[in-house]
Image (cartoon, rainbow, N blue to C red; front, side):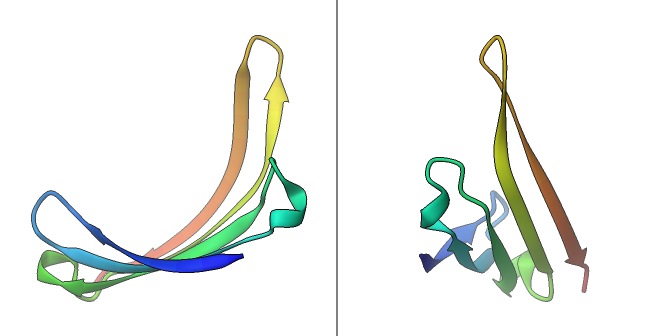
Length: 73
């Protein structure tokens, strides 16, 4: 499963976002997303991230491992 969307930051910059998630692992999906700056102060920024399954600890605490790289213009 995947998709695309746009995101705006508080200063008017806009990013294009695409994501992929593995629905076979519901509700503990893992997946990835990429962001590219397309307008305003976001132009030139790029990010690529992956996330893993959610780990459920006692006391309603949850941890999810993320790994990201970002490029500044």
